[in-house]
Image (cartoon, rainbow, N blue to C red; front, side, top):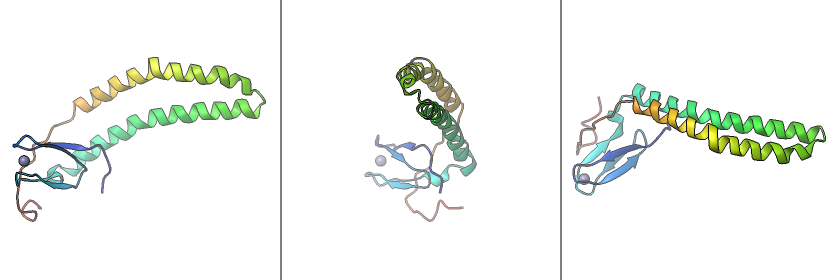
Length: 126
Ligand SMILES: [Zn+2]
């Protein structure tokens, strides 16, 4: 099972729903939507992009935490009062907006899928 971004399904009747990959949903109107119709490799690519972009904030957070630990260990705890606001402001004003733009651009290249509605769960499986 892949855990990645949600897949939003819009039913012909106008209902929208976010599903996980591999999940099936039966709409109130009786149509059935199966996300396993999406090729696994394609979904894996999206997930890979998401993970890659998530790695940067985590990496930066760790770097700041290491720097903080270093300052504390060297008896320089006061520097934290300079480091932390600087890191936070730099993240909010410079890194995060650029990061989001790049993420959106990467996601925009990806295909959109049209799922077929099917009522019988067993029919859609290859
Ligand atoms: Zn529906």
